[in-house]
Length: 331
Ligand code: NAI
Ligand code: MG
Image (tube, rainbow, N blue to C red; front, side, top):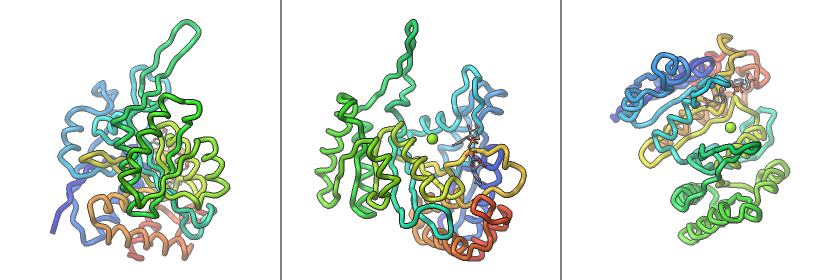
């Protein structure tokens, strides 16, 4: 039997609480995992001067995939750069994949099943900023290479789903940068005659996500637009306790709940572990263990449908561990 080598970076607060539950659930399957634990973030920065030391990166690179909990990013510390962004960049994780799917028994909209594919390395988050007297500038970088890579990723994903890609830009105003994004997307689309490509502007897309989310299958867009639209989509289907994400590169991938360390919830034992467990489900899909991935998702659907063992964010009064136990029972 294959033993999968995993890097586990639980992080502080509820990051630790939910990641340990995801690992406990993985270990209840008949798959085999060899987990190496690492620490990144502000506490590490205070000791070493960097949020993600080289030896951590080297250790992570020896594994096949990473399960990540959360970091806490202090505001206003000069010289400190977010540990998770540093890690994603160092590992070349260019595609940020965020599904928004309706599950039973929750406050969100019904029948939504879409995936937002966000370019993770450039765009408005190029980090290229400068100031002149009384003005400040951020350079929005769109390259042919990164756009081709992310749009191809989206079309490949659509081939496994409902064969529709919505390319979201503001090409009517950002004529150069989003002009190039759209041009490259149209070229890539020619290699996928079975996939319908739809072009849409970001403002209209923000509205249609709320009015008609069911029309979407895969949405592909640049960094900032993807950041905003994916939080909007998570809100549509029931919030952070149920929202997983993947960061995928050419030869490595990292899986995490969308939420952060939630300091006010930490230590109470009532954080919802479902987002972290759904992230581990995405990891199993990535590793080719699709049957177990499906079983885990079905187990979560069972627990949600029964509605007896839920954390407070979903209207219940159960503890984190009780929810994991219920999911393991349903497996
Ligand atoms: P957050 O995601 O930690 O919490 C936002 C709200 O959602 C809180 O009210 C929290 O109680 C609720 N919530 C989040 N996850 C939940 C869960 N599993 N179950 C039940 N309720 C849940 O975002 P916030 O408060 O803005 O940030 C806290 C810290 O986390 C900050 O330092 C921030 O920088 C960091 N953060 C890190 C992220 C990452 O590592 N990828 C992502 C988002 C925030
Ligand atoms: Mg965000």
